[in-house]
Each structure stands twice: as structure tokens, then as C-alpha cells.
Image (tube, rainbow, N blue to C red; front, side):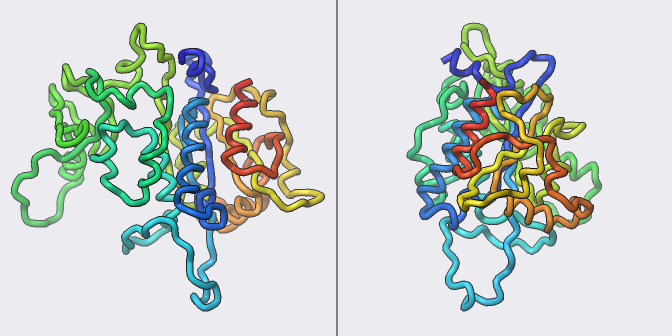
Length: 346
């Protein structure tokens, strides 16, 4: 297992803290690609497995804008795999049903079994996900009786509700923090020494000392065989394509952005993305924060064109990329991810 785990992309020198992020379209599990909810779940599982094996730090999901139909009579009945989320009244871009479900599936696959019911409940859309094999190599997936457990911050005991009124920023900040951690089922741990973490955030808890610790401290123990520093991936939703870049978790953004063509099933003598410098994946240098963007070029270009908030000055989507991975473009997205990461690792 150790040799298998150590094959990941970001296993360079620890002080360099190199990372690799995947950026994928929500349409990869949409009705134009998948015929059933089961097929969509399997695709998400394949993506998650590849991300874990090659130690991807982050998966970004971007929405491909869809023009509103003039009437149902013109477009026919919409095919839906997942239950529609409750409609919200807030303004601004919203993530599609496919984006929300893809994010939910990817998060489900890296959530320990003892925490799944508390986090996700008994959701219909996770029916097939519950039957799939757990992802290998993650040290926290089956250790319900371990000293270190994964949990998420909850409000704990709720006192009598006070009358609604205007609250100060300081009061709102205090209420957004908690020292109660749910580590599965009805088991709640109160953090010691007044330690608090943001509500609904996922953390690793030392159940002997009742304190939050880093995953490295919890799982990178002597003799454990686990040498990674990431312990899974984070999932981020980009409501517009520009949010992929402007909401990067890294202070200086991504240091290198590469496009990986895929799902170009129609023969064409040339493609617009061929203007991007081509590079063989195994010749890629070691950037500090690598971003790999996958998807059909037409969808990607349309996403850029429709982002007037962050990318209105971008006339040519090709300018967003440092290079294009030299891989076959007529393959499915989940296969392109696996092939690209395998070549980069080698």
C-alpha cells in the first residue's frame, strides 16, 4: 500500500507544498452524457478514485451555461436524474442541479462511513453511491474506534431563542464559531481549552485530548505507512468560469494552467484550442500550484463568453492557458483525467 500511495503527483519536497487541482464541468454527469443516475454515480466515483490515487488537492466544478428554453413545448420534458434542490430567492449565479449533485457525490466518497449518515442523511441521490467500494488509501475511512476521528462543527445545545434583532458583526462572528464537534451519529465532542472552529466545517479531532489537530499530525504517525500531506481533496463550486481563478484557495493563484481536451467525438480537421501550446504530460515541469481544466472546448468557450463579471476582457479563451496537454481528445472526461494524471506522474 505504501508504494501505491507514494505514487501521487504532489509528493515532492515537503517545503515546496506542490499541489494539483482538477477543474471539471458539471455536465459530465448531465443527461446528455449519462442515461441514468447509476451511470452518473459511477462516473463521479471514477473521478474520485483518480483524484485520491494521484493525490489531487482540489476538485473545482464549473457550470456550462444553458440557455433558458422559450417553452416546454419547444424543448420537451426535461430529463432529471436527481431531485431538484429547494429553490432559493437570493440573487446572483447559482450552481446547477448537476453541479450540486456532483459535489455531493465527490464529498460523499471521502467521508468516513461513521460520519456519512450525520452529514448526508438518507438521500435518494446517494442510493448507488452507498453500494460502491470505499476509496483506497485514506487513513480515516474505517477507523471509527480510532483515537483520531473526522467530524464537523455543530451548534451543540441550543438555548432559548431570543427575539430577532440586528446583531453586531462581533456577535455574528461569535455565533459562526463552535466548540462542539459531531464525530458520527449522536456523538458530540466538546473541544477543550476554549478551542472553536467555524460552524459546519470538517475537522480532525483528537478524542483523547478533545482538540482539533491537523490531518498530518493525526495520520502521519510512525509505522502508519501513510506519507501523504493532503488526505483527500476539497470540492469547490464555481458558479461562473471566472470563479475558477478568482476564488483560488492559494494566495497568488494557480502558477500553471493546462487544458486537457476530451469528449470531442466529432471529427474535425482542426480545433480552436490547437492554438494553445501543446506539451506532452510527462514533460510538464513541477509548478507549485497546477490547475488542469477538462471539458469539451465548445462548452468551455461558451462558459468564458457568458462570464461578463470576471472574464469580460477575455476575447480568446486560449489566452487563459499556459499549455495544452497532448492527449487524445475523443475520449470521455473520466478517462482523460486518469490518462493525464498517469502521464504527469510518470
